[in-house]
Every structure is written in structure tokens, then in C-alpha cells.
Image (cartoon, rainbow, N blue to C red; front, side, top):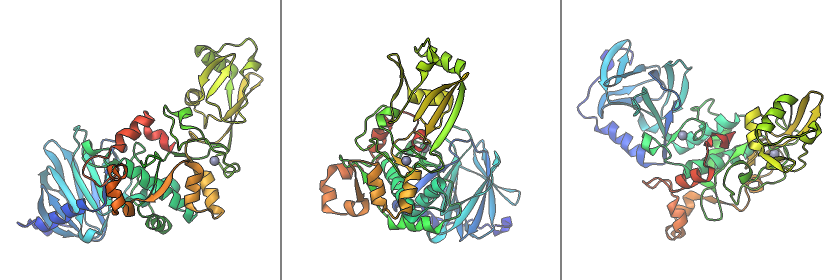
Amino acid sequence: MKTTTSYRRLCCGLAAYFAFALSLCAQKVSVGLFFDMPVKAVTFTVQSGSYAVIVDDTLLVAAIDKGASMQLLSGSGGVRLRVSGESMGTFSSVKAVGMGDEGLFSITCLNPQRPAQAYAQHAFVCSAKDGSGLLIVNQLNERFYLSGVVEAETGCTARPEFFKTQAILSRTYLYAHFNRHGKDGFNLCDGVHCQAYKGLLTRCRRIRAAVDETEGTIVIDDKKRPITPSFHANCGGQTCHSENVWREKLPYLRSVKDPHCRYQQGAQWQKRIALGEWRDYMSRNGIRVKNPKQFELEQSLRKKYYEVNGKKVELTKIRLRFGLRSTFFDVRVSGSDVLLTGRGYGHGVGLCQEGAMQMAEKGIACENILRHYYKNTSIINFNQARSTQAMQQDSMLFLFNPWRNETPDTTTFVDDVIGRDSAALQD
Ligand SMILES: [Zn+2]
Ligand SMILES: [Zn+2]
């Protein structure tokens, strides 16, 4: 699309439109990009393959190839499309459909400015419902989406069994929350509200292999629901009961000992806080002492509360107030300060990533890593299960088929369970 003359408005846009409609039927995921940031203008560039451009359901151009680009701007009447500085019109939607389900494109945000990011397969752009700018949706196969999610979370250097573990967890989250943003016009957003997804990044082959090898595999609880696959960086030697951090007690998010993460990066931390500041905060929360030594605390095992003289404050609240790496810390009075000596990084619930990485280093299989951190669960192949007679008869499993048209009921369930900003799931 180097010049406007390369555009051909064809009467019959049906072929490409069909390709787009068909792609909706397969196991595809529609991801809302830049969802937590209003975007006013972007450049779309073809990186590989060939793209058809469809405006308002009419084929505008049959094929644009590598290097071709177009600008999409938020306008009062919809999406303004510009090519080589020339306006092509304003449309209610612009679709770029990768022909043959292939294709790689990049999106560069111009307003606000962000570097180019690569994405696979298809793009859909229209006005955001709240009028804040553009809604940009990347529609792609589940396997490409999961590869992107795993890489955003882990990088590309870990062992295969660790990548497989993360792939199963990301897929479990995807199936449980498949239509979380149905009302917004896509399935999941690309932020930590859902699962962080930054496009294809380096297209790590090891991650792609891990996603393929675990195809269809998810973790379900004893009631056959996909689990809430919470994880964190480092548990400090012991994970946390879910009810110690959130409202709900979940049978699979139980505290377990973890000898694997103790010598890793996130295992130890210290923080000094002025005694006066600590005293003021505690006093506001009902804890008053005559002797500062009474502030001292030892957690050989994880506790839920910081308790002094029968008065207590939730450790999660203290963590939030003082910006601590974890709730797993001891308190000592040291001169005019309190010295907190802590273990772990993150909320401590579910899988400990540094522990899981070490287990994978030792050659432990992903199923055993998952069983270590998530109690009372089963690991199933959802694709196999849903094609069997058992699935049809098993109402619980059928209910959680994310590829049904309706929103899976798990969405509500899981949100209720957590009852809080799910960003912390990946803290
Ligand atoms: Zn979201
Ligand atoms: Zn750990």
C-alpha cells in the first residue's frame, strides 16, 4: 500500500469477509490491545504475509504486502484511514485480515507514543464505546495468544517443563475467563486485568513448543471448574492460604512448603521503617505499646495477622501500606527503626514461579509441579474431554466449555471468589 493507486474497491468483498467470519468460528481469541490507555492514532504495518483491508464490511484492497502501512486515527464519525498522508475516508470499522490465516503485523501507537509491537494474524479497529479513542483488537489462534502470554510473563530462557507449566496455567485462565470483556466487544484485554499479553515479542520457539505439547490441557478443581491459577514470583519457602490474602477459602489454594525457591533472587529482603512511623500506623490501627520491643514479630510459619497484645492488623494491609515485597517477614526493633526481614516476593498464593523454575531445572514434570502448588486438582485435556460422550453427560464440564457462544459461568464465579482487583493474581 505504498500509493493510493494501489487501492481497488472491489464489489465483491465477500471472500475476505468470509475468511474473517470463518476465523471467528475456530478456537480464536480476540484481545483488546492497549485497553488501559486511550489510543487516538496508530500505524498498522505488514511485517509478513499478505493482508486484505476491509472497511465497513466492504473489501477496500485485496492484498497489501510486507512493508505496506496505513494510519488509523480516531475521528468524530469513526476511524479515519490514511495512506501515505492521504485520507481514504472515515469508516465505522477497519479490518486487516491475514490471508490464509497467516500474517504478522505491527502496531505503533502515535498518540500516545509507544514503540512498535508485533502481532500475529488479524486486526480489527473501530471507535471505543466510551468515546475515548480507538478500540484495537487482535484476533488470533489460541496457541499464538498463549505463546505471547507465557513470554510476557516468563521471558524465553527457562526450562521446557516450566514453560509447559505456565502454558497450562495461562490456558486455564483463558478458558475460565474467555468472554470477560464480551460487553466491550472482545474476549480478553492485554493488561494484567486479564493476562499480560504484549504480542509475539521474540516468538520464542521453546514457548511455542510448550504451548503445542500441552494443547488443550487445563487444571480443574474437585468440582470440575477451571481453577483460578494465581501465581507469584517467590513464596519465601511457604505459600499462602487463599483466605489469608483474599476473601475466599479455595480448596486448591492451600499453603504448601516450598524448599525449591529459597536461594533464588526473590527469596530475601529487608526494609527499615522509622519506629515513629510504625508506631503511628499501628496506633491508628488499635495497636499501642509501652515498650517498642512489643512490636517484634517472628513468623517461622506464615501468619495472617500481625498481633500485639491481643490486637491485630492484617499482614496484607501492612504490606500494602509500606510497599513490602511480601507478608512473610519478621519484625525487630533496631535503634530508632523497625527492621523488617522478609522472605519471598508477591502475594504468596498458588504457584511460586522461582520454585517452579527450580523444579523444572531438576527435571520434574509439569504435572508434578502443578500438583505441588495446587492441591485437590486434576489436570485434564479439555479438547479430548469435550469430544467424548462423558463430556456431554457431564454438565459441569459442559458448562465450562469456553467455546460455547455464551459467557462461561466461571467468569462470575472466579470474580466473586477473588472479589478484588485481579491484577494481584499476577503480582
Ligand atoms: Zn481484562
Ligand atoms: Zn517458593
